[in-house]
Length: 270
Picture 1 (tube, rainbow, N blue to C red):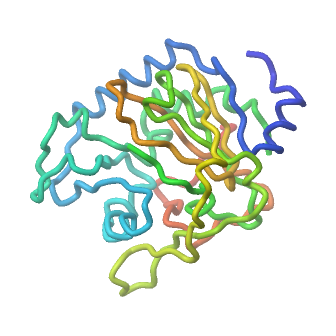
Picture 2 (cartoon, rainbow, N blue to C red):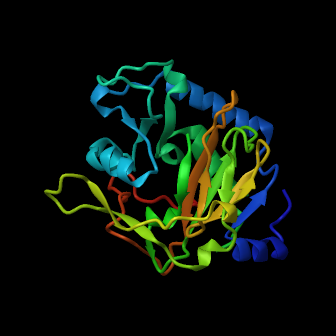
Picture 3 (cartoon, helix red, strand yellow):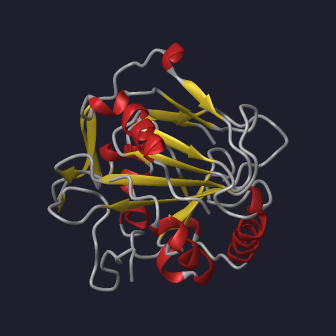
């Protein structure tokens, strides 16, 4: 694969994101999708742990914020479900392979297929320093200073405007962050809470970024992005993870995600 050009680096710093088409091969994408099908087929989730995944603030506090299943998922492979696919007892209303919204958060550490992709020389190279509502990744993964988080968003299938591609506000990574999700004080009714609030963004500011299977979108930690509801007949499978520039960076002890003795943050280059 060709190296990232200086022009592409400048574009990333200007926009807060960068599209790299055909970054991974069709075979690599198919390998990840096949592995995911095996993982879902074998998944066992106790009914009381069947939590819907949401990015809406009130729902996040209600679902993830009241769930140790979410808060302790940083060093495990766990399953989160779409809204409306479970009854009040946690039973599936649709086939379980179509019910999953997100699997996280330690695929990169424990699953050999996803670990190989995450630590691929391709990933090490770009050294650029359901509906997902508008947000900034640094709201959930806060560092001091800001600007040290980079998201990798890999399309395992074509992502289109019909099936839920990403939308961005170019240049929105330069204004700091609007809110933070932090661990609540012990004894609180929820495990997490929000400080600040997401502003009302103008829909006209967002631009869509459709991308073909195997494409990669690099996402600055403070750029505002979203995806629309997938109302098409096509799935839109992706693998996404974040890397942090560790040198001179402090990981907030208030973040929901914390390294553990079982899984310290792994170095990308080992």
